[in-house]
View 1 (cartoon, rainbow, N blue to C red):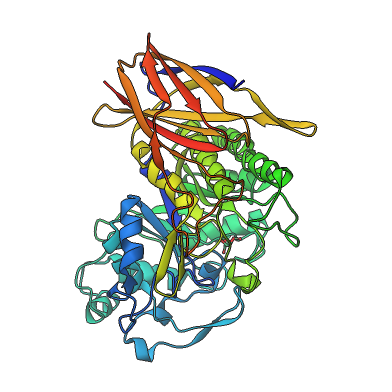
View 2: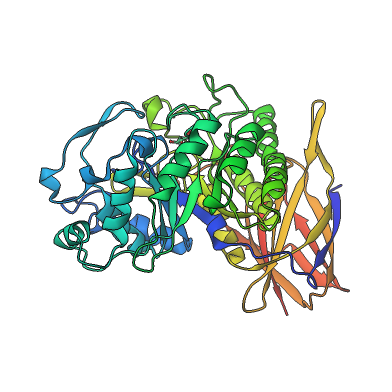
Length: 495
Ligand code: AHR
């Protein structure tokens, strides 16, 4: 007997715009994310464009990647942008103090990153250095990047090969300044933010969205303090929350787990909902008009590193369980789209819940990649409120909803519905009344796998890959979906 879920899709209501930036990414100088993952250099045998891997460019373009955050993460508050400009052979060797004390060649710097963004058609999101940098250094970076006139820094940019200024909208004033970005108290950070941000100017018509460092998960004290003390001097507040379901010093393996671990991770990822509710309630108090965006600019699963790889490189496999977390999280972000205007999964290649894993000249797409690809139809679409009564998925003495769903209407008028069934063994029949949606049929794709830890490898690239889905029907003003166990489905309703 399949379980049943019932609901209503309110096609006659406007539930806000699902910003494409909720589908953002993050690339840090960490492990093999930048070097090897994105950047191989122009001398590499791996096919590349100006040093960036062609296979990775094509895969990310297919996701319609809207933005890319760089250079960190923790790395950002120890990064000095001048180290990464000018002739590559004259750039200093520095050390990456946060991630294994590896020697950083600085071969990938500002120009290389912004060229990568241009290749991807993605907007850059830069993270500035508050922890170990100065307001002068931050101010100068912005002048170097965005000033169109005849100044020494703008001319240095020209000498280094970029005549026109770049357009930079997103600019983080520090990263995790409560931790690796300076171990600050919120009162101190709030004062520093005010000082640094004062020198982050809109030059030559460029307009910055200044992003203040927000809480570590559901830390209301941090949120309240910075909202009160910084207020309208920020245009967005960041928030970081990872899914581990374990203490930081004994993380879970990424593969080879049992149902208890499946349940624990899926359940932990749902904590995002409460964190957003609580954070938004505080923001609403200080900013009832919702001028300040909430950017969840680091999220995703965090497991023990793959055996045989250095712990600091945060290289982990990615399974069907991660696909569940991705689908659930994106559905949650949609529901919070009034305040949550950006989210960046950590990280794009070879680090944490990655889209892509590489090995030499080989590349694989993870189950998480496929969820982002299937869900891209929601980017910039109008959210249609969806009420759902889900059956429970019970494990031991705990229960979570088995099904999560989200719907939107895109600019061309097409309605898409994304559904996740986290129950590992039970299919669910979902029936949704279509209010104000004139649909005649539904087509779609499904992502599932044979095992809880089904995943792709370099010898089996398509173990988990989207397939045609024939389990959806429209009739009598409602949509019926036979949602397989442990699956993600995205549908397009045909008018
Ligand atoms: O994404 C890995 C690290 O997680 C980032 O550098 C840091 O911001 C966070 O703690």
